Image (cartoon, rainbow, N blue to C red; front, side, top):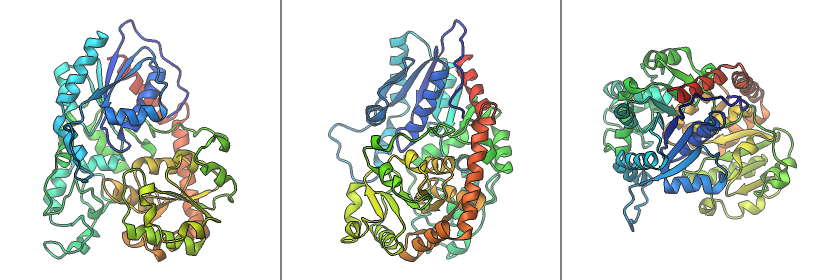
Length: 478
């Protein structure tokens, strides 16, 4: 998506777009990035952004204090009871939030209408919030859901019923190979007979699409299961993707379901990526450290803000880095540092740097980065492609395995870790392949070609830029 689109002039009637965020992971950040781009162009349109207080604070207090005048944030109830003690289950907060929907959004929506005196003209929401279609229907306004992950995962959710009927006893998601019928290993190697998803394997599916046979259905999986019912209510579907990256069967299948399908590009990124800031302005010290490294020599290691890597894998990864002596920059949360081998930080100080957080987009844009070791979250994948960086994939949950399959087998711009988990030999093999071998140079040339493809689509006149303009027209002329 081009970062330089001319602001449009409005008709006399001012529009009021309500934006519903799914307040977990990178979802709200992606959505507010899209809203910011829309607000800069549609300057006379009011955007009311609805999100939980905790998520709003983490977004806006950290880095987005200067919102344009036409965006206002509203807090919705998160469903967490007063003095609630969390059990440690990572899905618990999500489940409490879902119990509170859709009433929490409706209450905040009514408040925004009363406060502004402007009725809502359009509902722009995270597509996970499938109940938004009914709210839009009741208000007789267009519903425009935004799908932030790769579109392949959307198809998996749309075809959940078909997938469960065909493959219900095929897979155990906890990593064991002892299933009900004893054929799990063979079945995991089978590809899917699902429209648009024939290149994927049964084992790539998120647990919410194909749960273990003994797993209890969660509110979260039930909510995602409703996505297949949203199709008739959608006015326009926005994808965080480029049409050029689709396989033809997937694109055709999605177009057959959604009459207005907009591939607006990577919504959290400016294309082309802006120049890096002066390294001295980076308080983490990452950019200054990278300045001292050779071009395309450093392994950047980052697994997002949610993934908890098993202690044993952290040890194996660290041992591989120590033996290979590959220059590395590792973004590792402070609460996981104790899992590093004794003395590792001292022994690796000459060729590595471990930080609790790194400015990932800027790091991936640095010339010294040679490979990104990633959990394969959608935004991390997109940021690697936008900067032409090959990937080493260690997927963990959700759509991670689908993304890893795309990276390694479809686009062929990276490799998966042998055996699916970090081992000392597996990490060393992957690093050597990407950074030292001819195969790695071929992979690098492919990811550079993908980068050029999305740059072209994001340029003025490019397909993603045109789709973004259509989205602007839709929200300003309803």
